[in-house]
Amino acid sequence: MSAISTDALGKRYGSTWALRDCTLEIPAGSVTALVGPNGAGKTTLLKLAVGLTRPSFGAVEVLGLAPREDERELMPKVGFVAQDHPLHMGFTVAETLKLGQRLNPSWNDDIARTRIEHLRLPLDRKVGKLSGGQQAQVALTLALAKQPEVLLLDEPVASLDPLARREFLNSVLEAVAEHAMTVVLSSHIVTDLERVCDHLVILSESRAQLVGSIDEIVASHRLLTGPLADASDVARVHDVIRASHTKRQTSLLVRANGHVYDAKWELHEVDLEDIVLAYLGYGVAEYELEEVVR
Amino acid sequence: MIRFHLERSGVPTYLQLVQQVHQAVRLGVLKPGDQLPTVKEVVGTLTINPNTVLRAYKQLDIEGIVEGKRGVGTFVASDARPTPPDDDRKALRSALDRWLARARAAGLTDDEIATLFDDTIRPPAISRVA
Image (tube, rainbow over all chains, first blue to last red; front, side, top):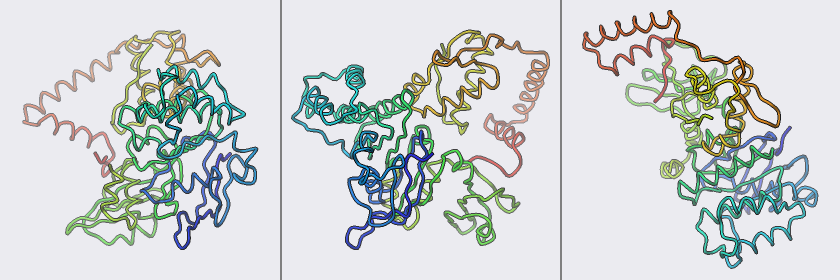
């Protein structure tokens, strides 16, 4: 069963496409990474899923419901943490939890209190006085205390230092281990996603370039190296994602359709990060790629 | 109780967990009836996907190394015993020691020996990008 499905989903602002012709399924119970450079459409896709913006084309369904039309039924089941986890900086932690409780009918105060205690966050501290990592944890607590079936996180760790990033991801994964839920997290940082996530959506230039289970994606991609050669033989059978040539050597990153069996090419496995970067290489300028790596 | 660790080795994460339980049982670190860490504990220490841990525990269950008790936890199976190194293994080990001595005498470095071993054990024309 799909937790989220989109059909030819598109969003246009004036003459600019933020998301275009996006058809994908995100399986229930998965932890899915939404990967792509800034401006690729990650935030737009999440906002469409949570009903914060209306599709220009196509449709999106979350848990079989339409985010805007079925808002009253759907919203208690969806947790959303927006980019930079916006909170009221003048509220204390306790007041923030109180607000969450007032606004959410499905609020479980035990979950919220236990988490805050576990994180050793002082209840009387103003949110604005907390560190970035602690603010992110408070925002996550608000989302988790709703007991959502689907948790959407927009760039949750982009602004965090490595330790806070690790602690935040631990919190998310522990919540998944404890209460079955579907998680979609967007990120322009690819490192570590292979461990944290089991499904992947690569967005680039407003389009979904690749959707699937990470195991299958890693298993189906190979790097072929060999003497300088024309790639058209390979391209007839397999999808060539990226070709690069030096004066003597040709390297092809391919999505293999069946076995690659050709004595001319040496065959290498590639890790997820290399695969993602190859897909993002589609017409992306070098400096943008460097940002993705960082 | 054992504590899992992960290596950046190209070995899939779930398989690393499976191998570490095998190893611990072989060495007697884990004994029949011992409890494995809960999924939540493993997830919280390694920052990995819960489904990966479930997959490793399921595989160990199928192999008969552990038994999952619903709502209680995962335990080392009563018939899982450390395997004493058998004679075949000892003989192979000493043959390998002799071979290593020959390779070093021939002037091969440890890296060159490892490369030769990798080349031999894997099918030709397949290698991993580091």
